[in-house]
Every structure is written in C-alpha cells, then in structure tokens.
Amino acid sequence: MLRSILRTLPAWVFLILQAASVEDRLAQAAEPSARINAPAPDFAATDSYGKTRTLSEQKGKIIVLEWTNNGCPFVGKHYGSGNMQSLQKKYTAQGVVWFTVVSSAPGTQGYVTAQDANRDTERRGAAPTAVLLDPTGALGHLYGATATPHMYVISAEGQLVYMGAIDDMPSADPADIAGSKNYVAAAVEELKAGKRVTVSATRAYGCSVKYASGG
Amino acid sequence: MASRESSAGGRLAGVLFASCSALALGASAGAAVAENAQKSLVHARLVAETTSLQRNHDGWLAVELTIEPGWHVYWRNPGDAGLTTSVKWKLPAGVTAGAIAWPQPERFSARSIVGYGYRDRVALLAPVKVASRFASETLTLEAAVSWLACADVCIPGEETLKLTVPVGGSAPRRDAGSAQVFAETRRQLPQQAPFPVTFVMDDERIRLRFAKSAFAGADQPSAAFYPFDSRLIEHSAPQELAVDGRYADLLLRRSPAATEQFSVLSGLLVVEGSGRGAAKARAFEVSARRSEPVDPARVR
Image (cartoon, rainbow over all chains, first blue to last red; front, side):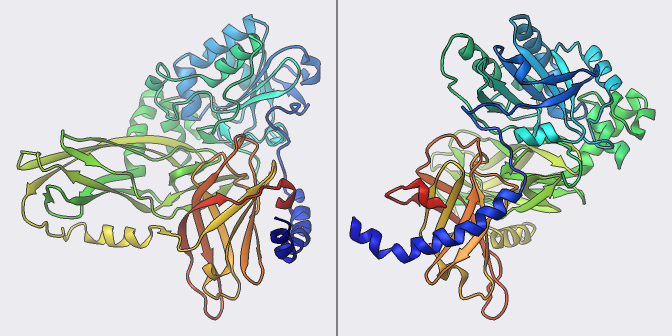
C-alpha cells in the first residue's frame, strides 16, 4: 500500500502542482452556488409589482422556484395543459411560496416587462406567490438555471433539496403529463411529511434560458 | 426568421406576449405558418442499407435528418437544456431493432448554455434483426421520430416514417440510394477506446486519466469529454488537460446535479492535436473506471 503510494509519488506531486493553476482558472468562471442539501443561496429580486423579494425573509416556508419563458414550447406544455397552474394553486394554498422567475434578457424570447408578466399571469390563470424579473440573469446564474422550465425546491430550513426537471417525461407533448412523475410535487410532499427528498437532482429539459449574451 | 419562429411557438404557448414583430400576425395565419415552419426545419427519412433483409442476420437502418441552416437537433445527451432526439420503433413480431449508434456530436454554446447535437445533416443508425420464424415476404418498419430543433428559440417536431422492404433468404445487396448516408455516418461514429480510462472525483471535480499515447504523438494535444449522462459535469466549465510523461489528465467540473456515487463514467473522449505527427480529431467511446483507493483530496 505505502509502497504503491511512494512509487506514484512523483505523479501525485505533479498533479497537485498542476491543479493549483487549474483551480485558479476554474474559480474565475461564473460558478453557480446552488448545491443540493446545502443552504440555498440568498437573493434579492424585484417582482412584477416592484416589490423586492428575498429568500431570507421566507425562512420557515417551503419555497419553489420555477424558471419560465412564455414563448418556450415546454413551458407551453405545462401551462397550456393547466399543470403548472394547478401545482401553484395547490401548494400556495398550503403555505408554500412559489416564485416564477423570468431570466430572458431584453430582446430575447420570453423577456417580459412587469406589465407583460402580470398579463401573462392573468391570461394563464397562474397563481405564483410572485413573478421575479431577472433580465440581467443574476438570479438564474446564481442557481445555475439552464432550461425552461427549470425547477428548484427549498426546505423550510433554507436547504436546497431539489433541482432539475418538473417531471420524468422529457417531451413537449402535453399528453405525456398524465403518466408522468412530478418531481416538484414529490419533493414538496416529502418535505411536508418530514421525509428525506428521494429524487434530489435531475436533468431539466426544455428550451435554454435566454440569458444576456456574455452573461 | 423572427416571425416564423415566434409563430410556431405560439401554436403551443403564449406568443401573444412575445415582444417581436410576429404580434402583427393573426392567430390563424400564425398557425398556418407554424405548420410550414415545422415541416421545413427538419426533413426526416428512413432508409435501409440493403435492398432486402435476411432472416437471422443484422441489417442496418438509418433515420436521416436534414436540418435547416442555423438550426440544430440534439445528441443522446442534449447538454444543459434541449431534448434528446428520439426514435421509437413499431415493428412486427419477430423483428427487433437495436440501440442507436450516435455519430459524434458538435458542442454548441450560446448565452452560457451548452448543448450537444447536430447541424445540417445527421443519420442515426440502428441494427435490425429478422427472426427465422418471420413468415412474410415483406416487412414494414415504422419509426416515430421526434426532435427539438433549436436556433435562438426551440421548436419541437415529430414524424412517423415507414419503410417496406422485402425479406429474402439470399444475401442482401447494398442499396445504392443509401450507400452514401451509411458511408458518411460510419466515418463519424466513435470508436471503442483502445486504451483504459480511469477517474477520481470529489464534490467539485472529476479527473479522467488515460495513456498519453491516445494522442498518437501529436504536438499540441487537446481533449474534451462529452458525458452520456447530462447531469455529470458543468458543461460550460473549461476542461483542463495536463499531459505528463505517461498520462494525460482531463480535469472536469462536477455538476451539483451529479449527487450519486459513480463507479463508471461513460461518454465520448474527443482527442486531437496539431503539428507534426498530428492525428485528426478522433472520438472514442469510453467507460472510465473509478480508480482505487479513492482519496478525494487528490482530485485537486
């Protein structure tokens, strides 16, 4: 054992030295700070009524974050069918805080003004706690949101317990919703039952988030 | 372009609120444009390699997608967003299709989101087997193909393709009409890596290690790993290559979504180099084994 470590020692030393510079370079790239079973990063974002919303002021409540883009067919799958609205209604009625987030940059698909956002909410019969406007993409990058829809669930203790797809049927076909397993509902139900969240990370499917170029 | 994309999206979702010129289109006009747009973005075709299929032998099929310039469709791992191109077979009893052979994809990066897929044209190959008990003289193969075509925006599409081929006892002949598709596609298929790959990982990093000889003596080697599992790495993070006397190490950033313990990491390792002795970029399919003992501190 010791002999094998000693034999490969030069390679390990090389690796450690090599990695130092790599680490510096990696640190420079924008890195999402959201990690599963770690405190969800706090944020301050303006909602469509001009109110500043922070994560810290919601402590003690389960929080759902939903990235959206009103021109994306995968968002259309879940709003056209009424699936997203019923989740919002069901869980906000139970005291869950639901933030719908728009990270589309101005001039890109899904970008909305505050007025557009409120009109969308009304037209779709949506029931989020608030729509957060994130045209700079700061909130999206903080959580590493890449797709619409991209879903996150935060426990009452402020831990990130789920990130990823809304369900296990990656398609744009609303007919697939009926037979799907909804990961957000599953995570919220497990939290409410005081259980560990079974599926904590999946791959989000859908359109890419339309961040500002270079962002 | 803008009006076509938005109109097609509007068939499914809230284009009425999109801030673009398509607002001027009426709903019915928009729907008509959407139909045309969807048809013209991707043309799908199902072809066989041979003019007939033989019982008890593997034949090959290709689902060929011709993609409108500026758009792309997705690989088995679509990357940060997107949707895997899907082929669902409907075959008569006694006929089975095998797993798809995916050509080497391209990496697309836009607005800090990375995708893997194909532009212009791609063919997905699949082996097909006809059992000896299959009685009929002809065979109709059906493939329900679905894809997501993306440029700045994304539009899903699907088509059901049918192909009828004779089933004979004698050796099949190559179909001249599909020969080019198969020849071109086979050149783009990854090879099984002839060298072992190992890895170590901690919470934040993954280090792949393989023999330096993978670069075949190229002067300025470079390498990239395309995982099959989309959740494994931060696709947009730089991949850093370090080559010493014997080994090459590729350092990847682990995705926070990769929460489980992995014993094998599968994907494509694309290696290339420039200068004297350089080989062209080659894609190898690898199944990296976790090297033991695992000491996470050493990933750094």
